[in-house]
Image (cartoon, rainbow, N blue to C red; front, side, top):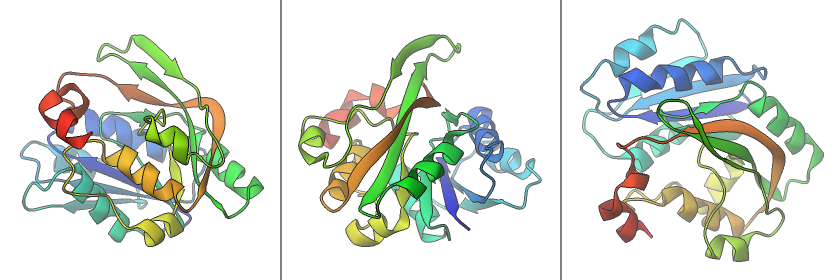
Length: 217
C-alpha cells in the first residue's frame, strides 16, 4: 500500500462522509483510508459503514482522546510508505494525491513533505480565501514565523514519523505546526503549486477557540 490517508473524526457524522468520499474519488488509486472515530456519540460509525470500499478501515476509540491521538492511532495502524492527513470537515480535489506522488517521484529522498495550495470556504460553500505554496527546501526559519501550510494539504513520507515521532497529544492546538517544524529539522519540503484541497470554516473548530489556540501557540 503506497498511501495511507488518516481521517480523525468526532461527532461530525454530517460532514465526515464528504471527506471520505473525496479520498475514495482520488484519481490515484493505490491507497488505504483509515477513519479513526474518537468516541463519537452520533451516527459517525453508521456513515462510515455506508462506504462499501475495501480500501476503507474504521477504528473507534472507546474514550475521547483528541485529534492528535486519533491521528496517531491511524498512523500506527497504517501500512503506506506515505501518509496523508485529512480532517473530517475538509476535502481533497480529485487529482491531489496523483500530483503529489508524481512530485515525489521527481525529487530526492531528502524531501520528506510535499504540500499544495488550498482554498478556504465558509459553511455555505462560499469562497473566502485561496493560498498558494510559498516555501520549499529548508523551511526551518520560515516555520519559526508561522505556518502557511494548510492542514489538509501535506503528503508525508512515513520515514519522517519514524525520525521525529508522532503528534504531540499534550498540545491543545497547533499540533500541525509543531509537527511540520519537527520534520523540517531533518527533511526538506516541496510543493505542488496548485489549489488541491478545501478547508471549510465553521464555528465548532479549534482554530475558532482562543482558549485552546493560545496555550497551543
